Length: 184
Image 1: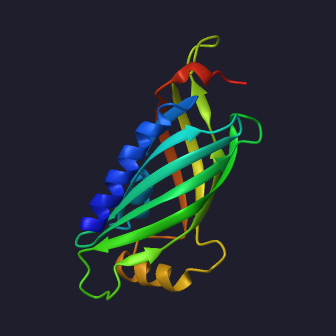
Image 2: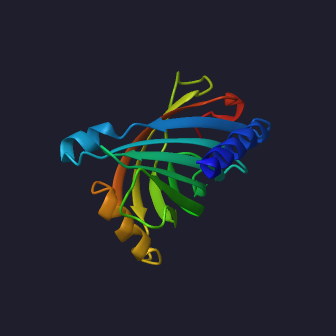
């Protein structure tokens, strides 16, 4: 638990550094619609802080909570997204990512290295000639696309049955300093 608190504190404090970059935003995805339709009894809540480094590159600090009746997993990392057209289409991957499982009595190991790739489209929302503050972002997420961490994912799926390698997300977010957020 101390590791989780330390990591969350570092991520929180580093988010203040991102506030000085040209574009800093926060997003949230409850993912509950997918979880209810598929009826996995596993619920995933995802949030991330983002900063645009250059016009086409974005750094993300994602945090995901995966909750079942008894076990919980916290997935924390650092991701990188590439926007080839400045806004709209994006492709991304995790640079560093790990999961911490709590409440499990069957697993010896509670700390796992993970990875994922993702793609999607960012829809900026706002009046035609004004600054865009809000966005919707449908995403496709593929966890462990190369199979490098297959043992870790097998162990996690043994505890959290609804934790799949393929996931569809709909993130909603807002830009904190929207001066650079006009649609191209």
